[in-house]
Image 1 (tube, rainbow, N blue to C red):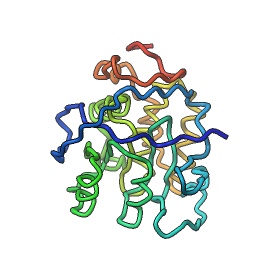
Image 2 (cartoon, rainbow, N blue to C red; image 1 turned 180 degrees about the vertical axis):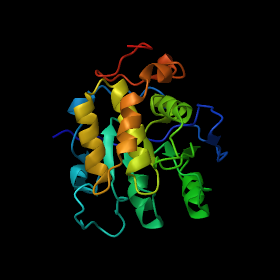
Image 3 (cartoon, rainbow, N blue to C red; image 1 turned 60 degrees about the vertical axis):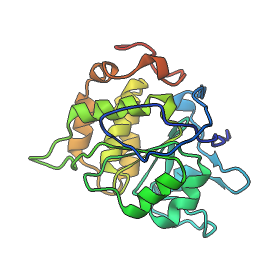
Image 4 (cartoon, rainbow, N blue to C red; image 1 turned 135 degrees about the vertical axis):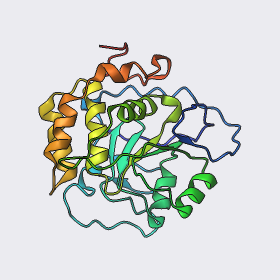
Amino acid sequence: MTSVLAPTAAPDTFAASNVISTNYDNNNTNDTHNPNLAAQEVSTSISIPKTITIDPMDLGATGESLSYPEDLCPPDNFNMVSTWIYRSSFPKKKNFSFLKKLGLKSILTLILEDYPDQNMKFLKENNVKLFQFGIAGNKEPFVQIPDDKICDALAVLLDRRNHPILIHCNKGKHRTGCLIGCLRKLQHWSHTSIFDEYRRFSHPKSRSMDQQFIELFDSREAWKVIDPKWIPDWKTLGHHAGV
């Protein structure tokens, strides 16, 4: 079992049109994270320093209710995606202490609504940058996920200057599942593995339109907006656009 320790937060250096800036200073620098764990080898546990060890495979996806110390309550559907990347449902106030232990540098949300004041306060107090790519649910027959927003979101995820980063929508199921599914295509996962992961987190209501979107997503379009200078050192990630 491999443990991952959350690094110290570092200053924000990535600029994008979808960034909601919280305008604070931080003199620490740490732009050289070197995550070198293959996606297929991603740990199934996260060691929170000086607290508890959590098996994220049991969080939310099984539907079981788990008990944690009151000040360490992870959001529903929380899990580790790859080194320094996490996913969950919408974080609530009771989850803030847990998220603080992760040493997050960024949060990427896929909700359309304005970010709540209490969440913005948490971001400001902890030097966390917010990226918002508002996406409507991929429901039949009239609503579709825009490819360009998924590509821009992937560019944020694959910029290690934004790590550690948490991805969320409302329930951490469908929109988050689509983004993670497209990330897995960049990591050269098979469709079988991608859809298995999607269904596990979207249970009990998986959407065929989501899975169709993932299947048809052209990863070459994402590579056009990803900065190769800052991509993580993952063994399963093609390090050149179009690989």
